[in-house]
Length: 174
Image (tube, rainbow, N blue to C red):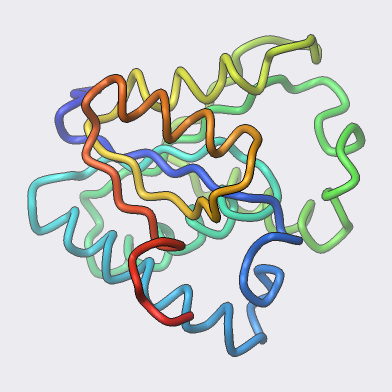
């Protein structure tokens, strides 16, 4: 995979997304339209690999948008980097039955799927976030300024010179 042609995603869990990331919510539909536009711009600029971290919320939501665009741009690839695989959908409270279903659908349509380790361990989400950035030239994120893994990933991406688009701070009304 050529890093210069890759973009990764990072963002919050469902409770911190407009419309909670629910497809039928008007705020989510607006967010999807904005995200689709940014992904299409990336494709026009030569990006063809899109990497997500497979967590409920922004990661799965962004991957769904890439899958939508694959119909128009069959050359683009969706890569999933999961932090671990054993009991993955049962560890975090964000994994509602609907989000598990959506994540499994993403996994069924990804072009490449990898995991960092088999079992959860302390710090594994940060390792996964570094892997996202280390394999990308750009980051499209939804970071509302709070603390946590998304803020860490944005800071790490800044230190590593990635082009960053933060939809939460872009002034776009969602």
